[in-house]
Length: 226
Image 1 (cartoon, rainbow, N blue to C red):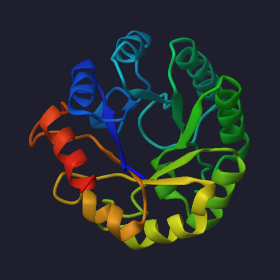
Image 2 (cartoon, rainbow, N blue to C red):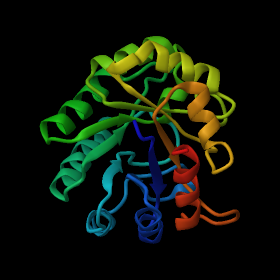
Image 3 (cartoon, rainbow, N blue to C red):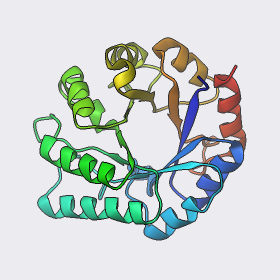
Image 4 (cartoon, one colour):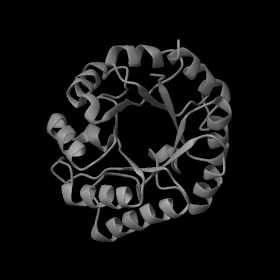
């Protein structure tokens, strides 16, 4: 199976770079410096117009923790509808309790709405703050998510390969485990080899830049496809 590269893009230039570099999928957000927030409808529409690439939209209404108020939850539900209306292939969700466990009612509501709209569901790196990652993995599978983005609860995916490999082993064919955080052309292939994963996530930026580079995208794809 050919490995899949997902590129995290926070602006239209990065989305264009991902498309031109040959990425199979975009995770679209805004405010990458704040670890990503929900993008505007106009940005979603512009990215959707790019040829030959899947589009997943981050659902995160503000920076900071992943504990959301009822008002924020309503915004998240509305953003899922907007993403679907604009043609997104999937959404990226996540929410926690103050105790560091998954907010099951909210996550179930978000995932169920996305699935009802015909979209794919990725659980994002809120997972890396869970106090019991292996229990959280089973809950994420049970709520119908297709994919888990994780650094293995380490600062980078390269540092978290042992946990990522164990998550992949446990999940098996029930869920796609996708390493992310600090992924670049020099380590992407090694991370996939060490974990047994088939998808990987990177912002594909040049040094000292917030914009993705077609050359970096193409380089990662070339390295993981060998």
